[in-house]
Image 1 (cartoon, rainbow, N blue to C red):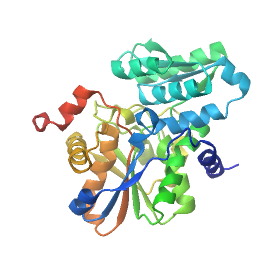
Image 2: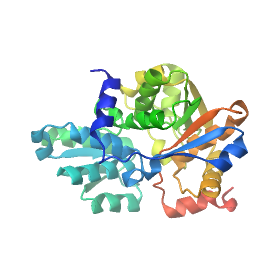
Image 3: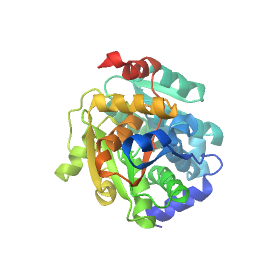
Length: 321
């Protein structure tokens, strides 16, 4: 079966465990930007981000033996929470390897959902390598946050929902980290709505996949701290998301930290949503391209809301700039 077929299957099989999240027309943002702007509210998905889609699909497709053995993953928060909840619902033991720098509140949530947390010194890539090694040694399934066809198929269900909710879109804005979310959604859009432009968005401070796409190959990229911690981190060599991103992305946009803050403030004011930095990236890109979007129908994907309160308050306070 093709990736598209796998996404269709996931879309049919994952309900009701995976929520169908609303695509809401934002009256004030539409007025302000001069287009018909819709917010795909994936921050309302279980565990507060789109990651629950991919995690649920991956666990759904495991054999009974694999489920009994338990699974291992690596995460700074969102993916770990998603796998922990999916595991809890399906009776699968979950161990999450996380960098010591991960937010305490996110680690506490993983534990509250029944996941076991193993802390690893260094950056997120160290945690991924440690998780993969442990999975091999313990003969358990390793679940990559993005470099896994079943995870990508699960994330693609968001694209199916968007098409069902608003089939006549001119553009969709999506923030990009490892590329699993946009690869899944893009596969759907290319098949069912090829006229819809898929616009990939990054913070200027964290451009691993952007830089790889520009160069034509994956290579290590030095990243700076960003509010969009959900999209930060390197892309592993040989990632299956890279060729998929090459195929489905129509346009690439970079936004500054200040533009991300402004977008987070804007949607809090216009639609009363608290969103994380990665969701702010997509809205910031739409704001940046607003002059080109006049009169068009546009969707901005709000991918998550899991942001530490202090970090959020700092971002939206006008003193922060």
